[in-house]
Length: 138
Image (cartoon, rainbow, N blue to C red):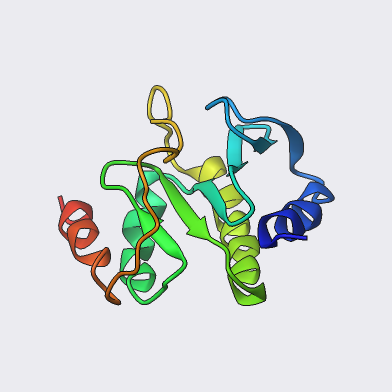
């Protein structure tokens, strides 16, 4: 079983989430009553709709994580799952995302997930956080 399958199995039983196809056309999604929240694209890559505001608030924490991939201007983060700790991180972030969907003012149309916008490459710790800190300070 891949890390994404383990995460999906855990999240499918959450009462606030229901399964369905991902609107991006690739993989499976879980949605809340507010919209899609998680896209499972591969056995290791998952997109999570955290909202712009929440990403801006957490950006400094994301810089230290090798599992989080950010796309400037996107309300979604890509979580690369390699181990159980990454799955635990995703589960925690889904809780944050559920709260964010309830409290953050959504854009007219969520920008869509990060599929085909993120390439998983080794990176230096903290490299992705700097552009978001500047953007969040606008």
